[in-house]
Image (cartoon, rainbow, N blue to C red):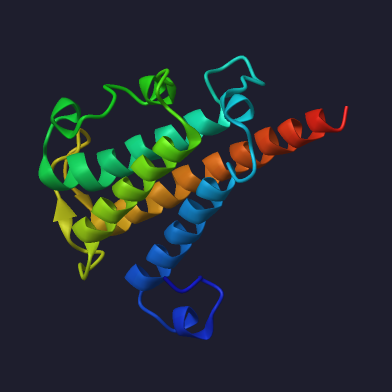
Length: 165
């Protein structure tokens, strides 16, 4: 996908622009794990469950809720995801940087397929809030990813600073 800061995206319709921004944030979140050890990716630096690996695992949940549950109406159990956002940060013993990255890439691919070629005006009725347009979903996912990229930047900075102590 072309990044949002290109002439082609400047002139594109909303759906192309929104997808470019969402994809940029997806890649930033994936890159937050670059060069880290498994221990660093799992490190709890704040009182909450928030870890870098947990943030990416939560992003899998976000993708599946908004482009799985909302689009198909399938339950979270049927989609194989956590029951709640808070639970989606929980790391299993078998979760690794590569396995969580692979799960996120798979979720992204499913999201892209679910929204491919659709207008932002398309309405999906499977979310617990009720019917929502693709436009709202794209903006909400962008909001979530932007927030979590900020969290990831701070956590990564703390982890890298620890190396120099």
